[in-house]
Length: 187
Image (cartoon, rainbow, N blue to C red; front, side):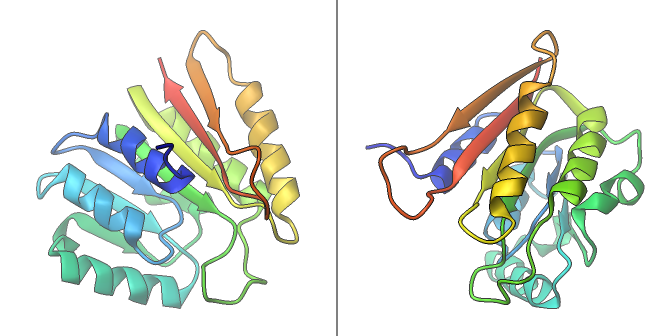
């Protein structure tokens, strides 16, 4: 059976993340990806998790405590556009994940934006190790979502193929704008 974009994003992360790695959850949301990343990097690894909403931090904190993986996570109550200053430049990152759109069951007016997502991607690419991956799951069925999807497509297509491989994964026969997954892998 084909995997949903979310499940496939987890498969792509599990393939490369090792104990002791440093990774990023650029949009912590309800903490599902953050908890997975924390389990994968283990107690010797580090997860930087970003979100601008207090509710996301609370939900993620609870999820991490329930899962027993709170100690290896730095919860940052700030947008992913601050990655450049929040994560030391010399930090080698194995992976990052974004869920672009809005926090489920919250204010749908608070959405990720193309310009801040681009800033985050620029900062992540300079820190990404060889064979590292940046996963973007783009939910675009809301006001502003199409603009962000267009940015991600254009950004990904312009990456030099000598340095990066980019995959897209989507269901093309489903209604209601199913999410599209992008995976950028550094060669």
